[in-house]
Structures are given as structure tokens and as C-alpha cells.
Amino acid sequence: MAKPKRKQYVAQNVEMIRSAAYESLSGNAVKLLILMQTHWRMYEPIAYSVTEAQKRIGCCRGKAHEAFKELEAHGFIKLMLDAHFHKQLARRWRLTFREFNDQKPTDEWQDWKAEN
Image (cartoon, rainbow, N blue to C red; front, side, top):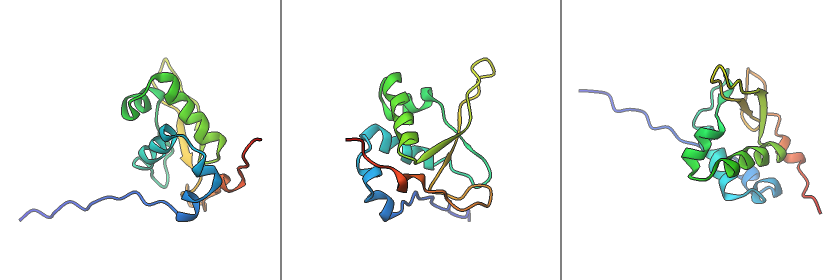
């Protein structure tokens, strides 16, 4: 008898969800953040392109790009390696609220302040 596949889950910190930084995110940014978490690995930055985000979120390229900018500005993601078009390499990101390379989360989202 085949062993059933282990289900995977995406869990988010309630403190983070209740934060001003998270509550001010657009719907596209929240969706992108959840999608990026499905690619999280402890020792490897997340390769996620604007094109992939556009397809998965179901929005135009400009809105997908804005979602990345928003997540970065709010401190939820950090760029680790820029894209290389000719080599077809997507940008590489790390989630600031997850461990990375045996380092504790940096949680930059906690420092975010709304602009008046």
C-alpha cells in the first residue's frame, strides 16, 4: 500500500497579519506573498519572476511588478540576486519573516511605518 503524501501548509504569524504593514498591503501583494511562501527553502533564495507572478495572481505585468515593490517596501521580502534576462534567471528573494541560511528572521516588516 502506497504511503499517503504528506500535506504541506503555509502558516503565517498572527502578529504579522495584524501589523500595520500587512494590513496596508494590496490584495495582489498578499496573494504574491502567500504564493512565494510555497517556494520557501531554508538554504535557497526564492526564484520568482514578474511573469510567474502575473500568471499566478491573474493580473497585468505592471500590477505584478507593483506587488513585488510593495512587499519589498513593507519589509516582507528582500532581494538577494537580481534577474538576468539573457540567462533567463528570475530574481531571487528571501522572506524576512522566515529563517534563511541558519539565521533567524530579520522581520523588517516590524519597522514599517505608513507614509502620511
